[in-house]
Length: 309
Image (cartoon, rainbow, N blue to C red; front, top):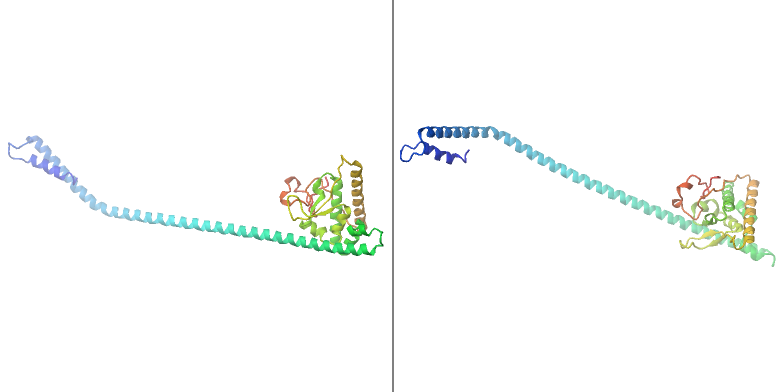
């Protein structure tokens, strides 16, 4: 309306013109123009009054908008702070997980080193014992064979001397289970392969004097490493070829059964109960992480899989 004021004044001037030569509007049109001018100016006055009345509302609206803007900024800052806190916490959790994993790996490494040292000490003591026994035998009386390994009977006697009753029970249970598993599954290499640094094996049998000797007497041999894992000593029993030497395989299998029966007789003498043989599972040459779900329900105390099915 303020912008129209200049145009309104022009129309008003023409409507009020007295000079007949300059008149543009007739009397009727002049009255209509003047009425329009009056209504425009009345509307302008009402608009001015409304503007004064609306001024407090505009101020309140401006304050509300300013407060909303500040609140939005505060929410954005709070969200950014929360995201930074969450990122920092996630990073801290990741670092804790990495540190925990490093500690776990270091603990496993120390445990493996301890087991290997125990194995080396046991092997050294075993060689010294074999040497004493060999030198005490008459010349030509089998001393060379005695230096290589003890008989199963002497190995069990050595276990009995070096173990408590509980340790002897566990060691003989494991020894019988190893023999029984191989007899039950002679073609399965998993039962004829034992990692020396396996914690359960060393705890139950390998750490005791006579433990490794008993396995050597059964037919295991010591090797320095597996093909895929260097510097991992293990015990392995070779199966003769059934196709190429059926008689040799039969003698090997009969020998295994005799060893199994001899260990069982020793357990009966000490009043020790045998554990069930494995239906099908993984041996000591594999870790628990690689054991499949189908074998997860048949693990027994010695670390191999069992179940008696």
